[in-house]
Image 1 (cartoon, rainbow, N blue to C red):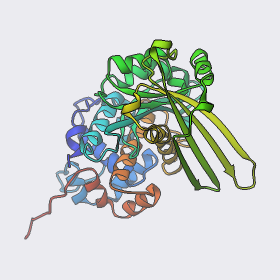
Image 2: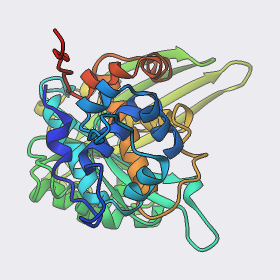
Image 3: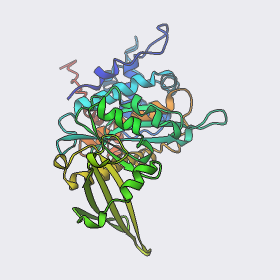
Image 4: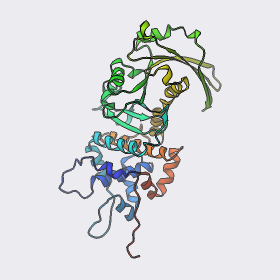
Length: 381
């Protein structure tokens, strides 16, 4: 299990050399341990450090004073560091750690790593003189590990940052899923040709020619190839899927590298309401022999992993109500939340709120989750 400290040491320190007492790594480790314990604000990050004993602070790299006492970084010290931090470097370090740590446990579907790309607004970061921050991230299906994250300014800029977000990642053979906003031909062609990755692209009316071609196929002549039903949260939902091979010699579909056309029909019954039905179309670069209909259905359904992660960030970590807005602090806080969710999900936590409450009462429980093994104090023994 790799140590998070090794990855955080690659983040450049934005502070002047003069007057430093705490190393940047020690401050970031305190923040990471506090995030795993459920800290939702900069104040709570500092409060976690204040609750930690001297032995725990020593393991995290907090220097000892000449009078032999140790104090955790104050709220102002943590806030200043997060505001001035290189957010790109922090995202790269935090993204590399879980990817390296959980290479063997990352969910593979059909022998492929499956990654969802989606954006999220930080609503509380808006001010009169600045718009709200908007982040675009790449998150693995199943266990939500954030591999990359970038600030894009606004939702309309997501498609322009799609390639910049994924460029540093090795995506050869991986499956990339995204919503209709990112079903842009240039980005999809780049995925298939440059990154050698596969994709499942949802097609809506923003691609009118491709949507009309898919809608005009003879779906009635195709039998249902896979069905799945779920119940919960006061509703029942069933989904059926049909696929059709796209004949390239007959013109194919007006979308790059599309080999299979997909039709998903959803039926939802909310308690006390009428049943609703919805039909959606998608295309994929996989061929008939490369993926079964059940696998394609899991790719489309699994894209909601990133939405579930956003829900945890909002409900458990109160991201939408956070008023952190100065400098790079909003993005740094989002990165710490991503790290905490990915680490806790990997160790098997099904209820993040309950797990963070258990860790909050005993701060030393956060260290093994970060790959840090406390060394016993043998002084006096």
